[in-house]
Length: 317
Image (cartoon, rainbow, N blue to C red; front, side, top):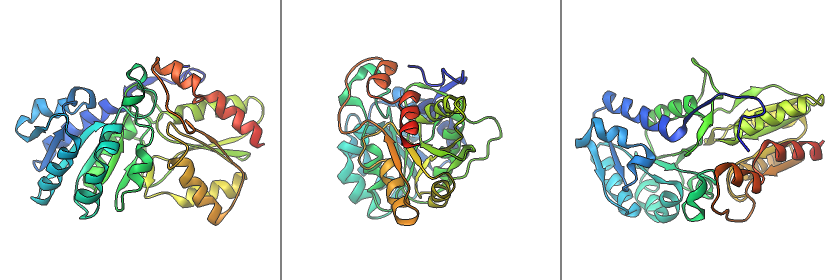
C-alpha cells in the first residue's frame, strides 16, 4: 500500500528531513539555539545543523537519559536546546528524566521523536515508536505536535521554537504525501479542516492524513460526504473544532499510526464524551507490536490504510 496512491497525491520530503532543514534555518536566526543528539544525527537529520554550527552541537552518544539532563542544564543556562532520537528511544528510555528534569521545572527544551510508528519498516519493533504520543501527552506542560507533511513540519518546528516551554515534535522516516501547498495557513493548536463534509468526519494525524483524504475520495464516489480534519496538535487540543464536527456530522472515525491507548483516539473520545457524544470508530495499531517488513507491507498487514478507514466509515453509517 502506498499512501496517496488513490488520489495520486504528490510525494514530498520526509518530515524528519523537513525538520532538519528548518532547524538549520533557525540556527542561523537564533544564536542561542543548540542541539543535543544521541548518535543518530544522520537519521534524525540534525546532521544538517551540525554541518553549519558544529560549536553548538553536542553528541552525547547512545545515552538518551543523559541527553535530557544535558539539555535541561543548557536550558537553565539560557540556551534553547533541541534534542532528538528515535521516538521510542526518546520517550521510552528517557521518560523519567523528561518528567523530572524538563516537565516538572518547565524547562525550555524541545524534544524530537523521529522514526515514529510502524512505517519505519525493516528496522523492526524495537525501533518503532508506537506509544510516544501517549507518553508525551502525559508530561504536564508539554506541547505535543504530530505534523503530516513537510510544509506543516516546517511550521510546527518554527512554532515550537518560538514557544517558551517544553514541547514534543513527532517526525517520520518515509517520504510523506504533500497535503499543504505554498502559503498554507497553519495555526499552532488549531485543527485544520482539509475537506468539508456532512455525513461523518475522519480525524487523522501524521502519515494517516493522506489515508484519510484517500478514504474520503472513495466514499465520495458512493455519495457519502466526509469531513477530514488534520489534528496536528495534541496538546493544546482543539476541542472546539472536534466538538463542532461531532455536532454537525453525527459520527467520527479516528485514524492514527499509534497504539489504541493514549493517542489521538483517546483524546477525541474524552472530548466528545464530555460535550457531544456520538458514535466513534477507531483505526489504529490496536494492542500489539508490529514486525519487520517494508513500510507498505506493514501498513497493509496492520490495517493502517484508506481501506480500513472506508470500512470503519461504512460500518458507522
